[in-house]
Image (cartoon, rainbow, N blue to C red; front, side, top):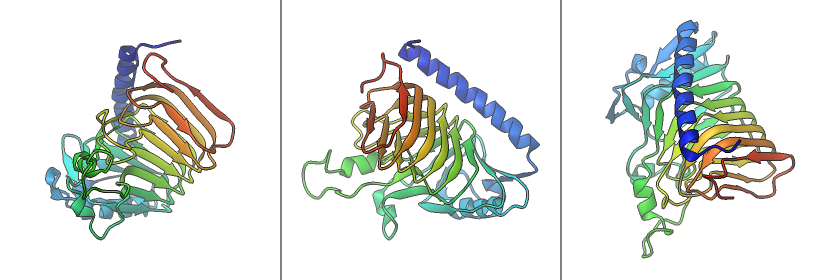
Length: 277
């Protein structure tokens, strides 16, 4: 069935609301519920809440009981580059109901890995949900990019990926918005059993290298029911990716689906009215 862009947008928005309701129900039933505020976060979009986020993650990941780590609704948490590592003792739900905001200036990455912002490594059974927003605040990165800035000095190095998973298994990301990523919005490297669904991935049409979803050496991946409107590929794949299924996504004005050196099988179906492949 061919869906119009408007129908696809409505479908994803309805799904986002539904996912948020389901997630809060799950949080209410959770045996351990932790919030960033419990660990001293301010949540005004200005203060540096990075240490509170790291401390909350450490507590949730080390919990002997299944935990929900919540980013509270109607608040914004400015987070500097972090590495959230596993393995965790139990499955973990990162419930993003509010907003996570990146530092605005690339200068804040001085002395840090310039390709990482929210970096999650070696975690199994992680669910990210909640109906909230991850804002990469990529405007200054784009302005300094050599693809946009034609005079020196310009930035030749790749900017950070917004939300990046590496060496993870059984990861689900659903029902959140990722916007204005400095580079890729959502990426997976050497991950297995991945679900990315009911997502809204958005950036201006002229923002360089802002792929919606990027896969590298990952397998058993389902990408379904997403609205992707970025400045580059809606979905891109490199390395030895296998058993990747892309279905029911609204894609545009990006470049559609691109894959290089991926193993078979690869399955995809998009909204033809909104996608270019």
